[in-house]
Length: 245
Ligand SMILES: Nc1ncnc2c1ncn2[C@@H]1O[C@H](COP(=O)(O)OP(=O)(O)OP(=O)(O)O)[C@@H](O)[C@H]1O
Ligand SMILES: [Mg+2]
Image (tube, rainbow, N blue to C red; front, side, top):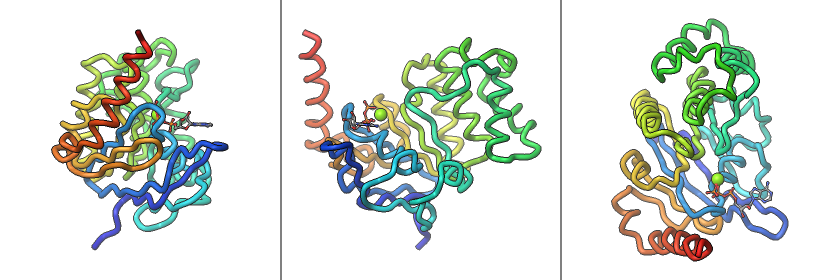
């Protein structure tokens, strides 16, 4: 059988006394979308940071098409074909949309990337913003720009950290379309998102984390009916409601 596009094996990350990720294992196949969900602080973004080597894991392994990513520099991970967006959008706010795309292309040493950049802008409906600076874009437009900067290189694994946060419903549909399109092109997508409807509609499988541990992994219908998951997710929102009162 072919290697999964991404295999996370017994991944562990500590911050001082806090076990943020606790022997977490899961896989993402090529041509599939896997959701990574769980309450705030359950370790989801830390998993992304360890996969991409932004943080160094304390234990476990991450394999991309069977090859370990451990020890690679950030730019080497990106050049392997792994794209990643951030929970807090990372673009150059003082630069224009086109300059942001240019820097992304330069960073990956792309040549003849301009036609692809133009077609991404057209597909995601922000061509008219080409000369606008990042700080003048809405959050949704910033997220589309950030995704485009990643898609310029046609990564075969895309990690999206809460792509819908702060985004207008129209842009949400665009983002859903991008994810579906990338999946049909054979790419693997790992998606962190709190919007359960979006996750359940879009994902082929869902991995659930709680306090750094994986507590469930399966198709959406199974996850929706899983008592442990319901308790972890509802427990967290109950706690939040109570904190408000
Ligand atoms: N760089 C860091 N230094 C210290 N603690 C951290 C660091 N990054 C994350 N943590 C802690 O690790 C735990 C997991 O955080 P993480 O950001 O991975 O959660 P998350 O599941 O992405 O949450 P959210 O849904 O709120 O984004 C939290 O308790 C967080 O405070
Ligand atoms: Mg997070």
